[in-house]
Image (cartoon, rainbow, N blue to C red; front, side, top):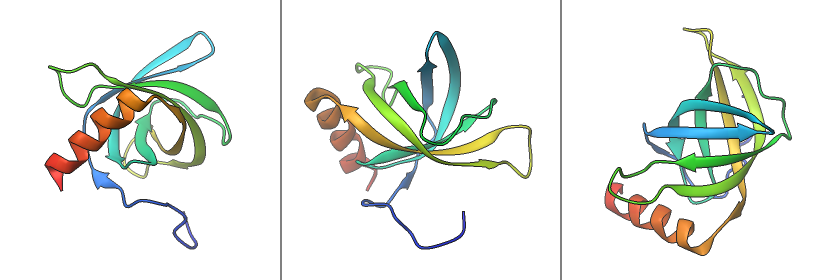
Length: 109
């Protein structure tokens, strides 16, 4: 990831479960960071740039997860494992999920 920062909102460290679906394939993973505009995550599999994925982000076990569609912006092989770091932008997120995400971010800032 070399170059100028292109994110519209700063990402905050966040380690919570995330489930991603690409077609009929599901992956359970973990977020690395999150913002109102997107999420960084670890993936055990390579995901091509520009891939859209349905995501379920469990920010709080006592709340409904954040449901959204994300688009892969960048992928980088992890230096310390067989995983990949993946940066995604939210391309479709309901108002309810936006509100849950905003509430979570307000608490951790």
